[in-house]
Structures are given as structure tokens and as C-alpha cells.
Image (cartoon, rainbow, N blue to C red):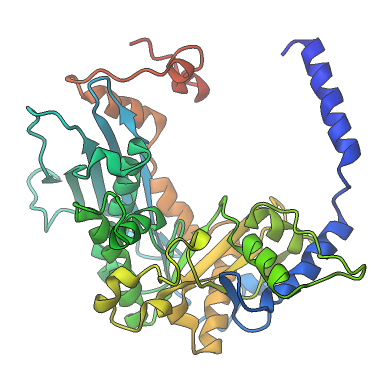
Amino acid sequence: MDAEALSLVRAICGRIDENVPRQGREQSEHARRLFEHLDKPGGGVESIGEPWCARTPIADLGNWSNDPWDGPTYAIDASTTQALEYTNGLIMDTAYAKLGVGGIDVNRSAERAGTVKTVVYYHEGESTIRSERFSEADETEDESPLQGELVPYDADADSAQNLSKAVSSVAQSLAEGEHARRMLDEVDGPLFLDGSLYPLGVLYWVLLDDAGSTSPAESWGRPREIVENYIEVVETQYDRGFPVVGIVKTSTTAQLVDSLEEKIRQHDVTDESGLRPDVSWTRDHQYLAEVLRGGSLDELTYTSWFVSTELAAGRFGDTEILDPFAQDLQFGEPGDYRRAFFYVRLPKQEFVFRVETPLLFILDDEETRDEIQNKALKEIARRRDVPQAVTRADRIAGISQGNRKTIRGVLNSSAPSKNYNWDGRWSQDDINGMEPDNE
């Protein structure tokens, strides 16, 4: 912007600032008063016990001495190249999954193993692309710590709203879930997932298919296989007495906010002036940032547990998200596998994490519920960030911009598709501080 335009924007933003109430103590107190209404029934989210917020010194959490899993912690993460598109219609994404090990003086040999999944969409009559497995040279698939697979995207192209996003979702969740499943014998402690407990996008396809709607799961078995990997991980960890914990770092969901609004409406809640209180937040992470505001830099603030009781927008009615897999579940009904969760706010960065575990793990045992919460808080407190194992998994599974550029250039038979905004004046390489791609 030139100076005149920037000055005009400053004036506009100044006017906005004048007309928005100052955030601070009053806003946080309002948010916490509304939080108390989350104990009311309905709305798709239920409180496990009476809802509460707490703050605890980070030093106390980091030194928690009653930890029943006071050994190594583990985490699975999978990064992707992001969808690469080519002018002949080919779309490809590669995902790389690794197991990170956290702790002091721990055996990290399990970090050597990796799982690579390359998912490709290419519907052209003369193509000979087929499913194929790969391993390191001179090693069989069973012996190699590094295993890969070429996976043709065999669903109807019209069954996904965004084909590139669908290819990426399959690659990421297939690599992460399969690597977690095949590394279970190496895991003898809590397992953290970098994200939600289940691959919700792929699971949504399965639910659509069961409801008779068009989805990639309609004629393709991979989506169900992906979900089954995650269920096996949950059940194996449960059987061995080790938690599975998902750390959701950022989210655009409004599940809790929508539930709060519905509870207020259903139960005719009014404030001291006799009016229905205003829920002005549009995302859960915004709202919880205010509910949990106010701790010192040496404290973590966090909530009690909640549980999801229905799908977003209620499209599937009373359907549980794992209903399509009900007959194969070993330790209960689909409702027992719901995602239970609490929120924690970091004191300095002011990030809010949603921490998930299967309801199965905490349903009938308040002591285990507290232990899993304290374990997650302990790992977060030690670094004032995501658990160490998650950070390690994220780092060792990372696919750099240089890796992406190399992978993109390997396909000599296909010319990269160009988008004017990204590959012209504003190329992706320019944005990432690299030399412009002049192909």
C-alpha cells in the first residue's frame, strides 16, 4: 500500500476500535457466567459432571508425582506435500508419517520407521497406474522400517466436493492411521495424535454412504479401512491400559458455542436484566480463550470434561459417528467411543488446545479421568506447548518446501498446473522465501 491508502485503512480500523467494547475483565466474566449453563441438557454437547474451570501452577503440573505412565510418551504425525495438480488432470499428494518418542534418556529406535502414502487421481483410459507397495532397497515389506504405497484414488470424481482436498485427506489419514497401527508393539505408554482422535472428514464420507448419499466411500473401500486403523489403535491402547489423546491446536468449529446457544434457548435462560444473554462468539477457541483468560504466566488454565453427543448440524439425527463400525467394536457400543474433551489455554501465547480422549477411557472411572487430564496437562506444562512427543513427530515427519519442489518435478510425464495468483505474481515459492519457479 502507498502511504495514503495505509492512512485510510488506519482511519477505518480506528473507527472500528472506537465502536467495539474493550475486551478485558468484563468480557471474560461474561464468558464464564455463560460457561455455567453448559451443565444443562441438550445442544449436542454434554458436561461430564458439573462444568468447572481451574488454574494450576505450571511447576505443579510439570512435577506431578502420581503419574501412572511416568515413562516414554509417543505421538503420531503425518505431513503432506499438499495436493499437486497437473495440466493433464492428474492430482497427487504424498504423506509421510512418523512416530515421535518423548522423555529423558528414552529409546528412540522406533523413530526410524516411517510410512509413506502417495495418493493419485488420474482417470485416463490408457493409464496403467495401480496400487503398489514399496520398501527400502534390499528389504522386504515386512522387514523394512520404511514402507510406502502408491494408492490410486478410485472413488468417483463427482463424489467429493473438492477433489484435491479429498486426495490430501486420504493420503494424510491413511499414512497416519496405518503407521500408528503398525507401530503399536513399540508403544508402551500414552499415545498422542496431532489432531482429532478420528479422521473426521473421511468418517463423514462413510456416514454419508451409510445414509444413502453420494460420497467417496460409496464404491471405494479405503475410507472404511482408514477409520478401522484408528479404531484398532484406540482399542489396543485401551486393552493395554495406555491412553490415546488427541491434541487439536487450531479449529474453526463452533460445537461448544452452538451447544451453549441452544441450551440458553431451550431453557429460557435470562441475565440479571431479564434478557437472554448474548453469545457473541463464532468459534469455540475464541470463546474458550475468554473463559480461560486471567491466569498468570506461570499457570495453565483449563476446563472440565465434555462429550460430543451428536454430529454437526444434526444431519444424521441420532447416529453415532462410529455406527457404521458397530458390529466390529470390541469394548462397547458406538456411544462409548465418542470424543470426550477439555480445553487448556497456554499463558503466554494465549493459544487454546482442545484435548480429546475416547469416552470409553473415562466413562466410569473418575480417577482415570483425572489421571488422563493430568497427564496431558503435565506434558503441555513441561514445554508450555504441545507435548514433546508431538513436537518430535511433527519435526521428523516434516516435508519441506524443497522436498515438495523436488517431488513435484519428478513427474516428467505431467506438466504442473499453474494458477495465476499462486504461480504468477504471487508464487508459492516466493511466499516461502524461495527462488521463483520459472517453468
